[in-house]
Length: 305
Image 1 (cartoon, one colour):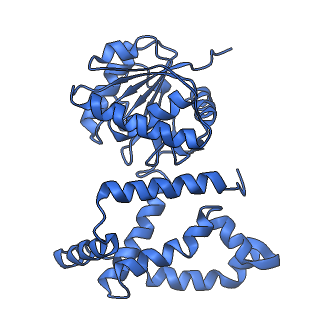
Image 2 (tube, one colour; image 1 turned 135 degrees about the horizontal axis):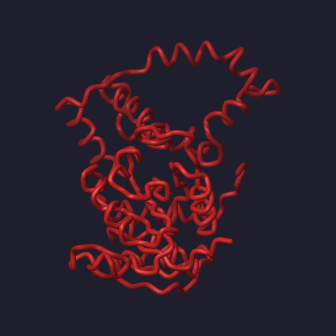
């Protein structure tokens, strides 16, 4: 029987790494974090403290040990699970994962956080690529449950998925790798049309955002597009919806835009976001986002697993 994961290493102690560290500590898991920059340490512990306070509001008050080092080998020693959050650069990832692979126990799982890089490319220089998975979270990982997993070994995927579930996350396993995975592709498709609407002068940036947040976004927090349209089909469910309203979907797909990001379009977006932000800083907007996420997590009732 595989031993439970009680000690993890965080490689890359920026915002994503600090968020993972806070979540693991709040579940009683020991965390050793690495970043090559000594300047990263203060920011790391500051972010962890803020995230831990948020997790305490959710009833997660575990006290896993937490340490920081600028030496990679020091944090990898004894780690059963490595969460790598290095730069989104294929060459850097390949080298970093190769280093981690060479310095960790053969049964340790290595999870790489990448938004768009392919697993097959970033594990190419590793001696034991089968124990390396892509595990892509959504920001901030300590509040947003999604983790997208791509791997080659079913046992490794199963063990990693079980670990993420133990941290209260919702792992989604891809059957094959795809640039952008699932969620970012869906988000990119939506944003493309949002930009098209700006380009065509259909509405203001603020009203386009509001149309999503006050409409389908509320339903999507509870169930995805397939299940939403299943309910949209009435008694006939998704089968009835596709039979009767499928043609209207096709017409809408055909009318979707292919916008440019010309200087003019970028100017409109930037000015629209500035107007919508109403003078609030990035830090203030992040705080508002996190406050809203906490409220959602406290009140949310799962419709489906």
